[in-house]
Image (cartoon, rainbow, N blue to C red; front, top):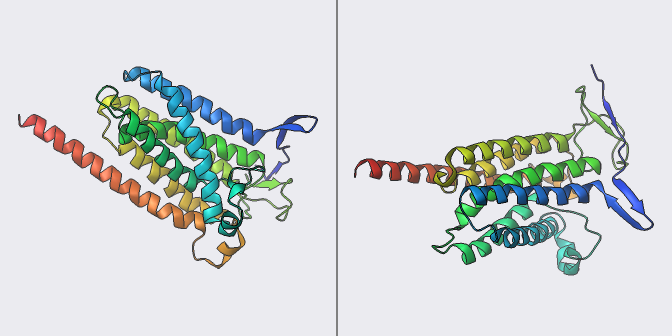
Length: 277
């Protein structure tokens, strides 16, 4: 039986002079690259134009980064956003908020679908989001692994045998803690696999909005509970009954439930009308 795990990983993969490559950046980029391959596979299976993949990837990259950066400052450091808005796009890039990234991605996909929802491609907003969440869930897995490599977003103290001692995080006491980053990474991976299985079973007959609903419920429902195991990210959260991550997760889960109920009701109605013909 393990008593705890010493986590002393260097966040830098390698450096050449002043230039360094960090695990976080590598994993972040890898999430996009693998996500692009997932969407390429889906487009091929459903007969969508492969040439649209590059445009979709560009929308996703810009929307994810901007949404995550703006979300971080808006939700966690609003005073910085209003005093120096250029910090959103200027280095060093400290702070990415997953809730902000979600809003950014949905906004970017809405803009993308406005151009691609014609009868020729039929890439409506819900069609695109139902498929892109498969890639986003995988990306979430890699981002949380990046947080682990950075020894950031650490968990609360624990006596479980798999507790991590984050040696490189000097902000907290060097005692065993929940590896909350690993919990979320594993959860995102399983959600990705489930969403892919669900899509692979129904493909073009996937109830519109169902995969997006499952994603929102799964990712942010689990996020709500994982927050109980994590240290607060900013000082003001200590005065709140629920921390900011939990507060922002509640509307996401409710939206997911709504989408799931509506999508299956519409699907049942379509099947019923088809039988009555």
